[in-house]
Length: 85
Image (cartoon, rainbow, N blue to C red; front, top):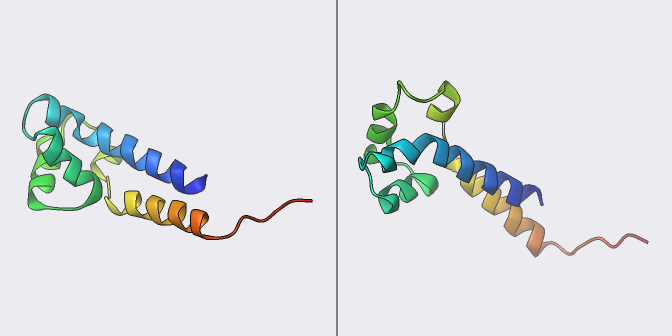
């Protein structure tokens, strides 16, 4: 459950950061989607274009958050569930 929560948080954080970039057509949704899972110069440029319109926390989006959530969710599925008596 924690892993899914982290993934959802990462997607929301990404959307807050990149929605204006997609809305103004600086990046396509597909290009912005790459910024969810990785880093590139294009992602850095898009974030720089929105510096004035976003709160500081949105500018701090880190793609690793998504992968940490995926790893936690995968690990929770791979480990045997503990049964409560």
